[in-house]
View 1 (tube, helix red, strand yellow):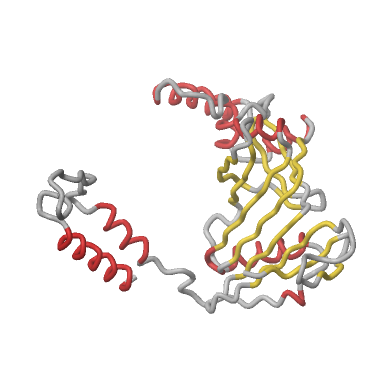
View 2 (cartoon, rainbow, N blue to C red):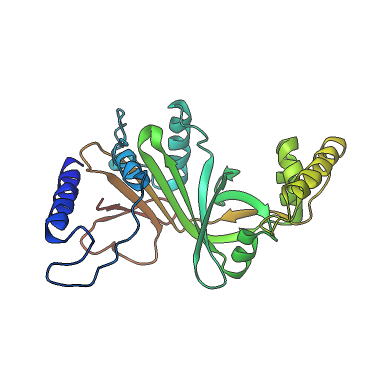
Length: 273
């Protein structure tokens, strides 16, 4: 960061000596327009603040991939429990990446509802942006980041909607507030005003309290069936451990790597950081 500052000061000094005060280049009569300067130096202050942030200023746990189980689910559940024990805030939140109708990536943060032999579970309205995108392109990726231990997990695979019975059970297993949010409806649609939302939310809360078995027809539970699961353990010396599980489709691993046959048709591979 100090080198960056020194280079910036040097660059500014050189520019000042090369040009005239009115911004014209040496030997030319016309002025060269300059972008407007930020009188409060907001961007410079932002960069200073950004570069001052520390990464993993903690004691990181060790991870020996040789001891990892043959399938990814037990390791995910173990790391989740360790994240909770380490005090990671909201370890059950994750990012969900999908593709829209124009093949552009989209991403948002939502909650994990389960992780079992079927896959990783989450829920939303089928009429929401993510619901419509999954209907058109039923492949997605999940990302977990647990800074308390310098760990992240990536999951990729096809997504399948659950049936109405399972989706309704998912809705009723959650809090009154979650039911009220689902009953508010119109997720991802353009909102006319905050007052419109306040009214719809008040109606939904009242119904959630008086009708705890109320249904939201578009509420859908989804299951992502994993085809690839990667576990990343950060290292202070940047010798990060990346262990990827992938469904076996043939013999051998990636070029230059060593694949290990795991359980339930999984292949384990180490990746370069």
